[in-house]
Length: 260
Image (cartoon, rainbow, N blue to C red):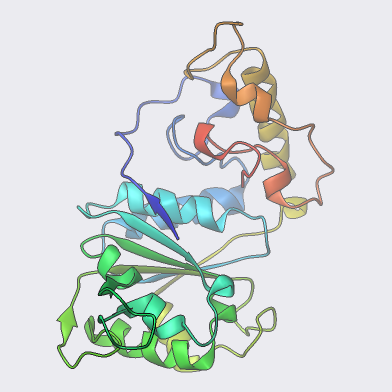
């Protein structure tokens, strides 16, 4: 699980050559028309409570865009990131909803789940297609009414959680199990599609320029004593355009080396 705090407010961009659809201190560089549309759509719906489903190949920036959506929202809570592919099938329910002390042999304490951790904030479910069917069924119920019970309890808990999810395709072909159609319908109140980098070379060029600036300590980021931006050390050599986005630092300081 990853917890992301709310960053400070955005500022105006300062580099016309790299000016994206979002401020310069955003974690996203959006130069290509398709990425601009994705970012603009994300910003348009960030302030709503609608669930958002991010669709795109691995390395296209779904995680970074999800973090940006949370940052642009008015939600007071934090963002909790869950890699559904890392949830053991026999533990998925208690990981999502928590468990009561004594619910099973090793339950020595009452432990809240991811939904409680994200109350008043955002829960980002990455690799949704990897979630076991039992988890999908339970997720559908809480997505409908925000109510659940911890494992071993009958008490009903209610949370206010904004749901974001990411898949590689809507058919679920990339996952271990098929995605329930009703779950896609519930979580796909807003669908945002992200293209592979090979289909948006403008973003690759912007990422290369971004890395060049970072290596020379340019831009608004803090510099170390040697005079080079700390970000520069994390910027790899730019790969071919058809490589995954995480191999190109086309993102902000917190996402160097992963990018979009």
